[in-house]
Image (cartoon, rainbow, N blue to C red; front, side, top):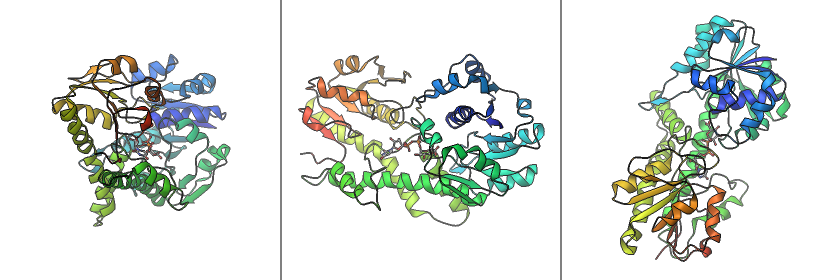
Length: 404
Ligand code: UGA
């Protein structure tokens, strides 16, 4: 098929690469000319596992452009433009603008909305453009986006005239749920809000564990996860969820429901708990900083999680800023991010980072940080993601672990 993809962020680029891998001819459009130039030179503008290999391997079936006219004649165009949350409400101007532009240049294409949009958005766009508008929310995680797109747990398709979307994704062999646009749109929000709720729930249990001698949230979560109804996923306590999706989507869902006169109390509590995580971690660290006379901390991990260079809503950055405001010096290291943070010092390796500090803070789960277990570290370790085995360290303090 001839497929268009509008918006070449994580979702759009990965969708383009995977659809080209499965023999579609793909035209990717983005208004950012720099991004298009980089892509035409063969460089992906972001880090995602396997993305570069996919782009290189399928370059004969991939074209990139900033000109919407190049979409003319596409069978379907995926819309993957951003939907920011502004004042707790979703802003759909990018999605609506893309759809209007597609309608002008390719009025026979079906529009497939991948962007996360509140219920009613697709129907509104259908009314205003007169095009076929299908909702096909994405559930991929950054860091494993290619794998998730190749073999998703499920494919949700909303709207009538949905056959084209089912055909595009047939290669995945994944279960398909066909429904209305509105259900498809809400399934995405409800899924993200539910996963965020699991995280905030286990973070509250972590707070409780810290007050009970002998308690450890890791063991509690493992025990809970053995129950098939609960499942072990998204029960890792830490400094809260970050990234471009959960913080934005939980707020947008809450605001959307509020406008409908519905108070989503659990989602509200989930957000509140998440917002309290950084202060909680800083308080925990400060107790020992004072006791042990620690002056400089090394923070390992800067992106919002391991496996990505995305720093949007990164809890690690909030943590570093909070530590600096508390008068603590900070040096930091991330395997793929080299962004400057005012008032903190960037290290080029774990060794350099660890060597120049009095104590170590783990802020994301890169496997390479486990090297610390073989480095005979005698400095105190604050494990905010419960990545390390505590037995390797003399002074170890972990989130959700009782501490004298
Ligand atoms: C999330 C969802 O997992 C995807 O299904 C969805 O498609 C995507 O949002 C989206 O809406 O586009 P992503 O933001 O890439 O994907 O990252 P996750 O792996 O879900 O992690 C989100 C945050 O939660 C990270 O900060 C992570 O460190 C944190 N987290 C995750 C925990 O603190 N504990 C956990 O047990 C799991």
